[in-house]
Image 1 (cartoon, rainbow, N blue to C red):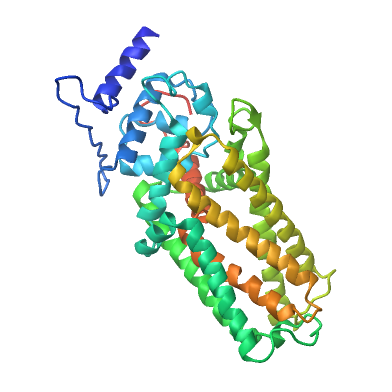
Image 2: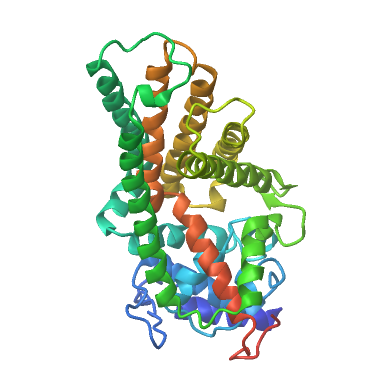
Length: 408
C-alpha cells in the first residue's frame, strides 16, 4: 500500500494535483500530454483532470473489472486529447467506481472519475458539434432554449391554424391533413430530420476519425450493438445497478433509460410504418386505434413518459459528486422535450375526433420539431458518441495490448 501511495503521489505531483501552491514556493505547472497523431493537446482544465485521475487509477486498478473504461485505461501509459475524449464517452457514469475508491473525496487525492468524465463528455458535444456555434448555445441554456423553441414553434403553428379560420372546428374524424397538408408536413419535418442526421453524422465522424479506432470486424460490431442496446454498463459492473444519492445500488436508472430508449424507437417505428402505409400501400391517415402505427406510437408515448419522468426524478435526487452540475440544464432540456412530445402526442390521439384537434396538433408538432432541431446538440448526442466509443472498445480489446500491463 505504501508503494502504491508513493506512485499516486508521484502522479499527483506530475499532474498538478495540489490545487494550492506550497507556502512560499512555486506552483506546479500541469503537464499537457500529447499522443502521436493528436491534432490538439488537451489544454482545458477538465481534460487535464481526467489525465490526472487516469494516471492515479492506472497505479491502483482496484476498479478494473467495473466497466470498459478501466481495462481501456490500462492499454495506455499517457493520455492525449483523443484518449480522454474516448474514455469520457465510454464512461456510463454509473458511480460504482466513486463509491469503491479509497482516494475519492474527501481524500487529498480527490479522485472522482464520474465527475471528471462527465465534464469532458459535455465538452466533446461542443468540440465535435456541427455547426459548432449551435452546440455551444444549447449547452449554455439547454432547458431554457428547449422550452422556448418548443413553445415558439407551437405558437407559430397555432397562428397558422388560426389564419385559415377558427382554432376550433367541426370534428374532422382525426384527419390531420385537413389542418396541415401532408406534403407540407413531409417537407417541413423531412428537412429538419435530415439536418439532424447530417449534424449528428458530421459530429460523430469527426470524433471517430480522431480516436483512430482501427478496422471494425463483425464480432466487434455485434458486441458493441449488444452492449449499447442492453445498456450493459449501467449495471455497475456487478449487475446490481448504479449508485444515485448513496452507496445503495439500484437498477432504476438503467430501467428508466430502457423505457426512454425503446419508447423513442417505438415512436420512430410508428412513423416509419405510417410512411410505408402511405407511400407503398396507399393507406392514408387517420389510422384506427388498433392499427400498427397507432399501437406502436401509443406504447412509445407511454415509454417516453415513464422513462423521462423517472430520469428527471433521478437527476434531481442524484449526488452532486456523480456528475457535472453545468450539464443539468442540457439534461433537463432533453427530458422536457421528450415529455412534451409524448404528453401532447397522447393528448392528440385522445382528442383527434374533437373540435380541438387543430390546436392539439399544433401543440404536438411544435415540441416534435424542437426535439429534432436540438438532437445533435443535446443529451441525445451522448447515445451516438457512447455507441461509437463502445465500438472502438470492442475493436481495441481484440487487438494485442501495446503495454501488457492489465487484463482485458
